[in-house]
Amino acid sequence: MLSPIAYTPSPLPPPPALRERVGVRVPRQTLPPPSLIHHASFIIHHFLHASVLLLLLPLFAGCASAVSAGHNTALDSVDLTSMTDDMAHKIMASPAVQRALAQNGKLKVVVQPVENRMVAEILPRGAAEAFTGRVRALLSEFAPDQFTWLMNRDDFNALRRRERDLNFQLGPSPDAIQPEYALVARFNSTTTEDPKHRASYYLCIYELTNIQDRTSLWTGKYEVKKTALKGFMD
Image 1 (cartoon, rainbow, N blue to C red):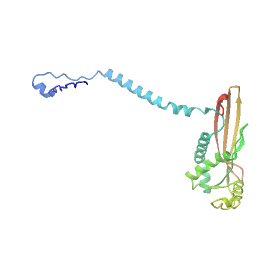
Image 2: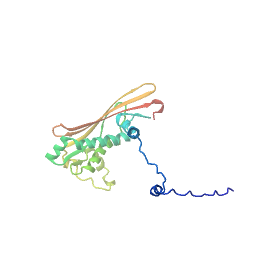
Image 3: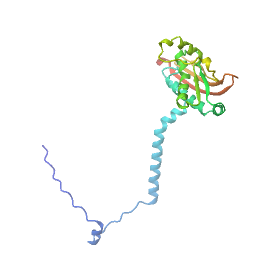
Image 4: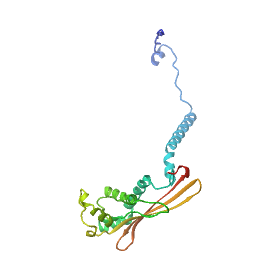
């Protein structure tokens, strides 16, 4: 067992005023020369600047590239979220859409599923509806007083055949309220591959079209390139 070590506190030195009275010389504190202070400030400033840049590098890397690398080249849920967020924001920011709202009030819009024009890519009905349906959901949440959303005739008729199994009323037929605009989307793609890699480029075009005169009120696009190693493709 270790014996305790005796601790004897050292006496505190007298305050400077007392030391001056008893004849003890008090050393004066001196500041470093201005050039040394400037040099130290310069080093600290650049150290902090470099630290901030290192923290932000992942963000810059994510924003600078439109290329996505992974195990497959198909569109996924990340694309769904990014694409529909971007399209909803662009629709609301469109000067043409804002002018139409100011002139005509709420726009009556019917949403159509995505038109699949992709090469060797299957887009199931549910996914085709999700890529336009989420834009509708976002605008319904954040701009409820600016759009009246109408169900397209095919979806309405499909639900009407199952109306007895539903817990809600479908409401009036799409023919009862004539839509003024249609929100459509067309997905295009090209694919290149070699023995080791596969790369797919997607161009997804969204359009808000006037049904009466077939003119485009607004058009937006989303582009992404995906690459994958064939040995790791799902």
